[in-house]
Amino acid sequence: ALTTRGWNGYGENEYRAFRYLTEKKRLIVEDLTPEFLGSKSFHLICSPSRCGEMIQQILDRRAAGGFGDSNEKKPIMIWEPVPDLCTPEELANTLKTMKYVDVISPNHEELAALFGENHTAGVNRALIEKHAQRLLAEGIGSGDTGAVVVRAGKEGCYIATSELTRWLPAYHQDPTKVVDPTGGGNGFLGGLAVGLARTGDIVEAARMGSVAASYCIEQVGVPSITCTHDGGMGTPEEEWNGSSVLERLTEFRGRTG
Image (cartoon, rainbow, N blue to C red; front, top):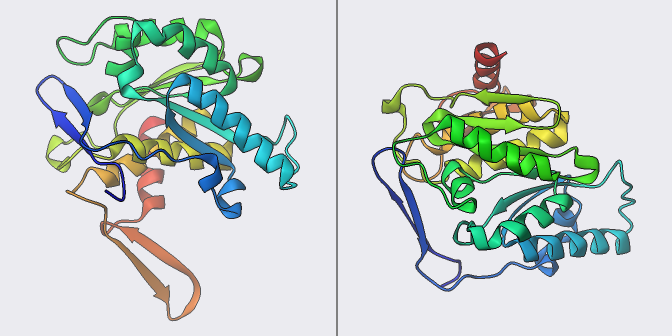
């Protein structure tokens, strides 16, 4: 297979399952083109040990390429722990690796599994908050300035840093708007990565992630994108699924401000 293929399963009470259908195709740092190597943020889905290795390799390649990183200008590292290693046996390695990232973002089931627990009757907010605080207490990022962002399906996301805790709702509150949740988590973290690079504000970044995810789950497959040109002049305006991303973000900001 040209790419790794996987299976996502969904059931009642926010139940989710995942398994690989083909051998994993491992992406390595050497695969990054110079353009991608210069990114302001990186989303890593991998084991704890590989996360630390990849971050160091990215920084080494950037140093060799003259990107001029400093402590203040290093790229933002967002880590999504690989689901099958969210186990109590990997908890110590997970806590150690958090020191090298700016954001750790498991979903609610993966976070619970790290501590040998589960959500038996839907999303348990108290359990999410307890586990997120346990991660935060160990320190995330340089100077313990990082964040935990827990993705919790229709309940939205929970954000925890040393300075704030905050729940944000999912963008879609009408369940009929959700056609297929596949890709919602990756869409969220892509939006979060862009938001952090642009604003440096974890809550605003999570809003951007929520809006990005909303477009991923409105249909089977990828969203439709159209561009309108103002008579051939000016900046083209994009519409996703027939709506303006900026207008949707503004509306969501008004709901959650």
